[in-house]
Figure (cartoon, rainbow, N blue to C red):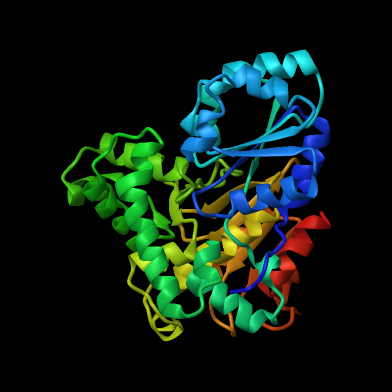
Length: 389
């Protein structure tokens, strides 16, 4: 096990606390929210931490106004805030009376949409940040070849990535999946059958990186398309699945309109597909789509203010990831091979959308140019490219 790994979100949290009364850190369970919050609390002597899943801490809030008044000059951290949504209306009064920044740091395992449903009273007073499992730029200290391969196989959940061996990592992810289905979805307020949701989750793993075909999934599960959509919404809102919508810059083209679905953590994807080792992964038919999702999540972690999409026409022109911000756009094709080759459809897609920059992301050691101004780059350089735009 390694020591504490500094999270990229730390500076953003600190900055937000200086400018907002309430800051919310959202993300999947076990992604490191508590560790990050405790680190911030320990560095700030004027702080109080409460875990709302712990009965002793929850008991301290039987009279929340009295507790908040007792600690009104301190930063109060409330972990697993979705366990006590009634607190949000009380926080508004406290925030408005003190009129100061940095009053509350709240952590939640539900999505921003679900949190906002319970926190309408905090509109204009709360700032949201999403903490993802470990990203490549946070753990890249052993050289890109070893670190990238381990992170790709194990995923970024701290206990999976930092496990002492591959078997322990794989078993932790299996336990995570089981606990998510049997306990977490109920605690987050969802009322869905765990066994059927588990089957759907595994189906999503097998079509990871593909276009969503709700009818096919509903036929396989024996449920309606509406039920499939509700299952997908649940996995999306709990940060397990990403739904990537198509880019539509050219309405004259016959564009694909269906979204793609990706499991957001490669380690969870591999556990659902029973991929245990690097050898299993390299020989698996899902290798390419697995690396596409892994690289995409790492790229998006460095592009929070860019709008992501993919581009595909019915004629076969395609780009894996398009990022847009205002008038600017970037195109990324993602390949799992160390000798990446792109198809004719990629070049046609570049002509269609004319991005400001075009890149092929692959597990290579050094960047190098190919024709028409396209550059092959290692994953580590994608963040630098985005930050310079």
